[in-house]
Amino acid sequence: MAELDKNGADMTIEETFAALDDLIGAWRAESSLEDAFKNYEEGMRLVKSCNEKIEKIEKQIMVLGGGPAEEEDDGTQF
Image (cartoon, rainbow, N blue to C red; front, side, top):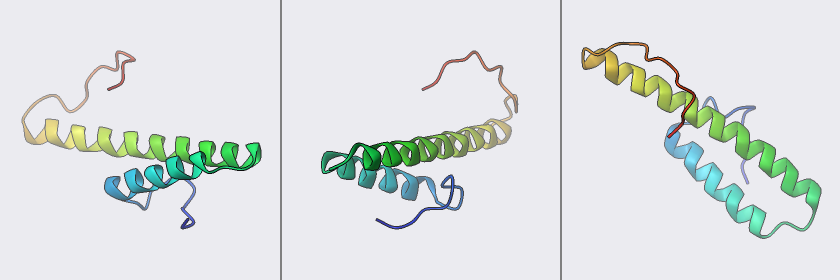
């Protein structure tokens, strides 16, 4: 598996999803708890990075669409 930066920031959304897919495949073949936990941590960093990128794109769409640039955060996720 390719080495990723700390949080997936240099990756596109598509690359981030592909890396997550690779991690899921690795979890199925894990032989140790330590490896599984390391991959879990990496997966969570990738998910956070992907969420941040999606939120940024949503804000850009709101600005382009003439809507409010900032929405109230009601604590819900997709």
